[in-house]
Image (cartoon, rainbow over all chains, first blue to last red; front, top):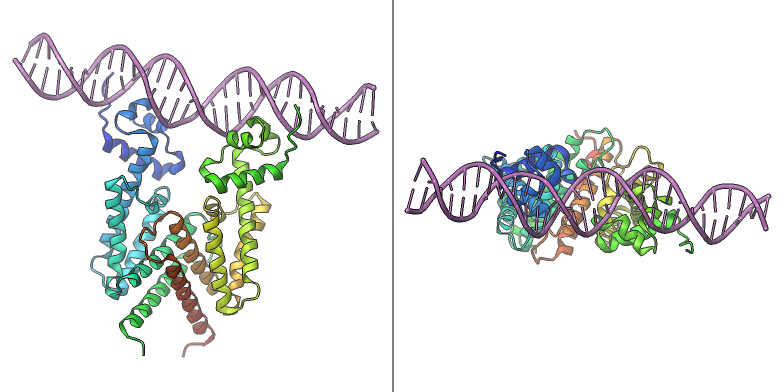
Length: 195
Length: 195
DNA sequence: GAGTGAGGCTATTGACATTAGCCATAAGGC
DNA sequence: GCCTTATGGCTAATGTCAATAGCCTCACTC
């Protein structure tokens, strides 16, 4: 029997592809092994079971999304940066419906890579809001509002909750514009000490 | 062997309780049967397998949430109604983290009960926005924006994505206020033909 | 009280994860 | 160029779970 030449990165990459194609539910060691030309127990040489594999796919997905958002934000400032981030966020989620939900699960305290990837994701959103010059609790509140809107819209869209034929792109653009306007008003209020 | 006296409603009710306690992942026919003092195959006399049971729990959850929201909205008008709806929505989701995600899955075209429950849920959100007097696409856009914000916030909260200690209630109240303000501005623009 | 059907049951199959333990291959030391 | 070693495959076995088939008995009806 020739060696298949697998290692952890290649196994995780195949798992990522599988989740993209078949959805998170369908990620099974048996099927993945088959695709890699190997029997299921062999995967345990590279990965510590299904839970570990899922965790690895999660980290990889957080990294990928963070990278996409970082690239989307460059060259834009102020409100434009937020809109660019929002569009990239939604596009990535639509392109990877199987993996998108993984990007919002809380980081595992014992996984340094997960913590790093999650922080990157948080940082890129925070970065898009930097121009508003909010700080402390106000900044946290703003980040939460933006993340909630984006995640909610994308999550509902992926779940097929927008059954009506009305233009979804338009609904999204309007929502993002409202969020931007709302946060800008918060920033204005913040910067202008009330009498 | 005495009969256990089960029927579809009692089996579904036990499943609902199980999801509330243990989460959706842990809903298994084997465990549920054990709780009901019965062996797993017996459940097939009342329910058409795990998929059917999950679908039934989903419908029940949509109904329950719709009922809660309907009750929350009565006695409020305008912006107040939206805030009341939002608070009730979040409270229910926090109280039922295992079932909440089921409430957003698209209805199954072949399940009349599911369609009815989903419509009720949509209608109660639409009702809270009625005072804005939006119509057609504008109304659809508004409903989507409100649903997205609510779903996103509670989804992130349930996922443990709000790791920072900052006051989550405050973040939510601010977001809802911004959504209300944004939609009111849309309504004003809509009612005032631009020059 | 006989008949009947609903609601339990056991037995079995099949998918899957996981563990234990074996064996060959590929890589490195002499 | 051999010998050692550990890595990366394997088979075999266990356990959990869903699902199906087919049996048996209780409870209700006539």
